[in-house]
Image (cartoon, rainbow, N blue to C red; front, side, top):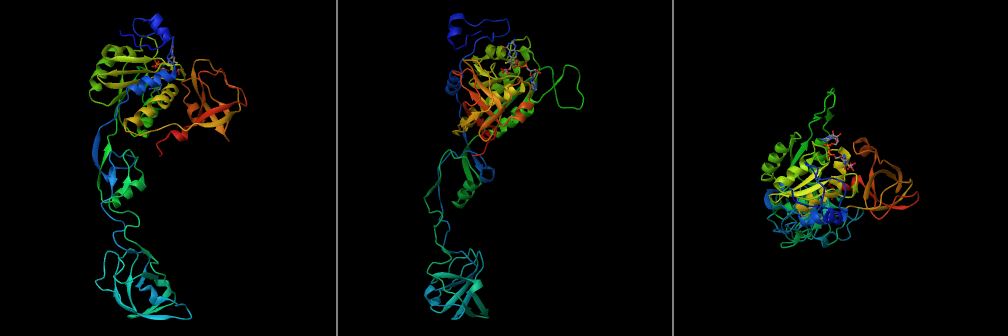
Amino acid sequence: MKNTWHNEFSKDNKYSCLGHNMLLSKFIPLKEAREIVNNHQKVTKKEVINLHDGYLRVLAEEIKSLHNSPPFDKSAMDGYAVIAEDTFGASNSNTINLKIIDRIGAGEYSTKKIAKGEAIKVATGSPVPDGATGVLMEEYTLSDGDDLEIHSQVTPMENIAPLGEDIQIGDIIVRDKTVLRPQELGLIASAGFYEISVYKKPKIKLIITGNELVDPAPTIDKAQIINSNQYTITSMIKSAGADIEITHARDDFEDVKDLLLKESNNYDLLITTGGTAISKGDVVVDAVDAIGEVMFHGVAIRPGKPIGFGMINETPIFMLSGYPVAAMAQFDIFLRHYLFKMQNIDFSYKIIKGTSGVKIPSNLGRTDYVRAFTSDNTVKHALNKGSGIIRSMVEANSYLIIDENQEGIYKGDEVDIIFFDSLNFNF
Ligand SMILES: Nc1nc2c(c(=O)[nH]1)N[C@H]1C(S)=C(S)[C@@H](COP(=O)(O)OP(=O)(O)OC[C@H]3O[C@@H](n4cnc5c(N)ncnc54)[C@H](O)[C@@H]3O)O[C@H]1N2
Ligand code: MOO
């Protein structure tokens, strides 16, 4: 077994081995764990997709417009294209008469050129006919056959969207690494593209371990636990823009080892839940150690301290706890960033300064992500319950972060808060 601990303690003492797993007695600091993870960051390759599939994908090229938009001087209103000077002084009490020489709808253009005293009926979106310098809204006109009576004047260029007003040929309209929202998709389409190059979605295999786990059902047997991680972690992975497939494995060293080895060749990233502690069923870390390298196992955080990270055949693996809250917190602390960075998205948490309305104990040397209910920037309740209490993640709306150099929080202290809502895939 390779020694992969990175703290001073481990260098001096080595880690103890219980015959099946590393002893979870010392942990590396969060900062150090983050560095190790960052140093093993993977980025996905590029692929070309149809623009229809572009929503929330990450652009892997710079887009330069192939078109002017609008592509011609365009009428912005339904009405009459006129020579603006012909309309000067027109009002309800001083109407002016013009001659209608043509009528066009959207998608049509007139071959005629307007001369003094003439008008062409146009629709919103029609090309403005040659010779016209303004469009008079239909509401200010009366027509009888080809005779047009106008009741208002137009200024030059009034109600005309000039060629290239929005985009000009060659303009850089969207940059590399932009997450595509509806408005970028519309802009790219207007620029003439129906295919785009994007970073591939990371392909993730989630392996859920635990002999006790069963799918949700109205009745379950004694000693069975409902597998909720298959919903929480899966949806978190999807919310970070990755594709996910799940396998349920039994707590068997050989089975888990073989499965991990096989899947390390098929996926960009492996994630496991369960089996990170030290009982004999906790086989995941040992399995990774047998076929790859465990870069760390145990980080000074709470919840989530037994998290492991390693590499199997150049494929990164995050070993999350079985406890539902611990696994979610581990995802929030490490995995969301990792998955975003795989797609070249630079994501950082929005940390808000607030006040604690409650006293919360914590240990020096450990970073705590305390589930908290915060309103008006004040933490009203701290839900620092067990890591199996999934309900606490529903009752809380935020994490209060207690730094490793801080021993406890007192009522009235300034604190760092991350709202759960700010973690979602909404750019
Ligand atoms: N002697 C020690 N025991 C434990 C330590 C320790 O340092 N020394 N660490 C504790 C901490 S902290 C955590 S977190 C857990 C991590 O345990 P595992 O990752 O090995 O998880 P399991 O033992 O497999 O499961 C824990 C708990 O969660 C339930 N579980 C597991 N998977 C799921 C799932 N997919 N959906 C819902 N619930 C799940 C499982 O049934 C257990 O109740 O270890 C502590 N122990
Ligand atoms: O720290 Mo464990 O990670 O949930 O209780």
